[in-house]
Amino acid sequence: MSMWQVVGQDRVVSLLQRSLARESLAHAYLLVGPPHVGKMTLALNLAQALNCQATERPCGECISCQKIASANHADVQVISLTREENSTEAKLHTEIGIDQIRQMQHSASLPPFEGEHKVFIIEGAEFLSTEAANCLLKTLEEPIGKVIFILLTVNDGLLPATVVSRCQRLELVPLAATEAESALVSRWGIEPPKAKLLVRISHGCLGWALSAAFDDNLLLQRAEKVDRLLEIIKADYEERFVYANQLAVQFTQNRGMVLEVLDLWLDWWRDLLLVKIGCHDTITNVDRLATLVEMAKGYRLAQIKDFISSIQASGEQLRQNANPRLVLEVLMLDMPGKEERSQGNLATRLSVKNG
Ligand SMILES: [Zn+2]
Image (tube, rainbow, N blue to C red; front, side, top):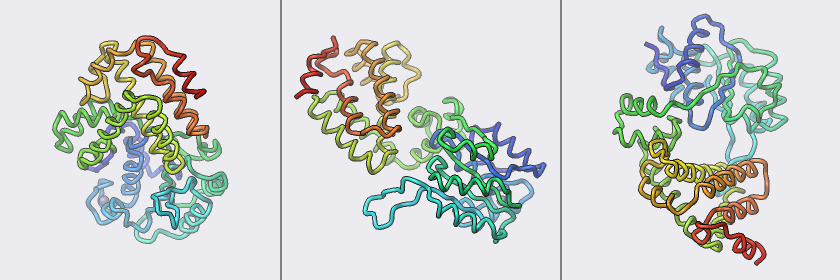
């Protein structure tokens, strides 16, 4: 039995298995899917299958498979955003630069060192700088024997079409909730209630669910963020603006973290909507049902819907590089507050905006 670690991506896995059996793999793959859906796991599995020493590949147990799993195999390299040197914060570069791609190309031109195939995994391919993408394109246009490139991205619309067209595109979709829950329970021995919570808050992306299953800090940190969110919902405009500014400052250092906070907001207000219309079974924050039920009583359906649209619009604007402070302040103004739950209070908004 070969051991593909990635769960729930049967269609993509069987396609790769057939290509492996026929030795008809593409020389470049583009794995597309949301964060933590299993793109890196699948890429590493493919690298293992290509270099495995067993007959049923990947076995997951031979030296080669183990080296790849622990990132110690000389012929399997991951290219991703690097950390800035001399930075005290854990600050990432905003792009994958041309130097990284040139180094990769040099390495690709050399024969495999210890395995059968060289595999280069480009994580976050949407972050390739224009020069880097153009440089990579040349390599993709002239395949090298025994070398395979695997690009990972959350959104292939952010990549040059020329690059996308040179790759075989494979889409990874999040697991259905029941499928993911039973995988967590049967394969990893996680208690059913915890499995349910993890699957809901990770939206079926098993990578995050598994990390959180074995690291309680992740759930604690999330709980803290939800608590903070609840404070802000109850807070006055002054406190909300302080919060907006904190997020805006954070955004300049770590965009991803702020976008995650917005996703948390979106989850919360979608839950309020679901509770309001009586669909308790499909909420994300299953551990906060009582709070949701109580809070939903204080809002009209239209207020909840409007604010969900505002959160979505803010996310779009931030992704399009709008001024983060402005976007987040407007979001805080848009959030229906205690004083206007029964009726929209435009006067309060205007006096705050002008004052
Ligand atoms: Zn193996």
